[in-house]
Length: 421
Image 1 (tube, rainbow, N blue to C red):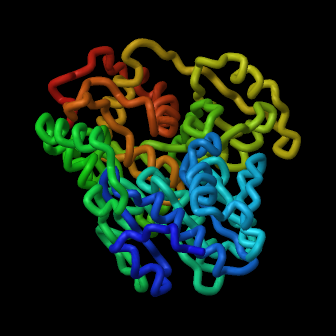
Image 2: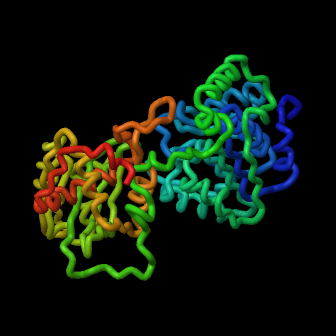
């Protein structure tokens, strides 16, 4: 039955021995995902009456997953009679073994994965983008069954990405198969165009070639706007909240998986900024939003929450919504936004001795860890801020806008000579 499958030499060990963790990382053209799809298809005949999950951090549609790769492989291998493909549910079912393969995005609702009964194998594709919040939820879910398996494939970005830290920098797990893979390990014939592009990049920008094709992490740390240990850090477990501090709240409105609604609670003390709580949601109806904020951001009903002013109708709706259980309305006000407001806010946040973030604020920690400047094709850092991983940062800027005004600080000019201080 399996004679058509091409198994890369370096992957033969995973067919002979059960590893709890399989980690393939490296550059473009290594056929990592293709090889792992073959592996999971074969394992679906050996396992009985269990579930697999193929996940990415953000999956807006099945086209943004390995679903189509599974379909093509099943057809090419002549296995179509053994599988039932239910595209409307994002499900591929091995009808001979009753193994069901699901395809989901983690960001929208990682907690929903807890409801997948008897989840035996988890495959995270493009895992460099997975958030710490998602990682901390999905991994214990899989390891609840006998002989579980977590499979991770990714092209490295930064050494601080959670999967790179977990498996490459600080791996302490037993029974792991970890392999760095590049185009030289690909068992299939790559087209001439692939090597032409590779050689062109190697001549033009060798560091970028190493990142794209050899799987090296991005070496220029200046791309990150906020440096951990310099601008921000995670609060220690023995930290005690200042009960006398003046609390401040910010809210950035969003309506897509890549741009969720993001609320947070913070306070300032001794030239440091402390972020204690976050409230992150996708697709939350406006009439549900006030109670969601009250439930997740303590004492917000006694304070003003400063909100992205681009949607005044949403601010009005928040102020009109009566929260019966709390016997109150929220007070939301729009912030003033204009040219240079993002850069002004960044400068202000960098003016604190340190921004401390509570470890419960996983999404904000991910934002601070990934918030970056744009780069050109040569890897040169540009003056523009990348419009990504910014929802929590924006909410924090909104929370602190009144402080900026009260201090009468002029943040109208972007200081290009001190971008990376």
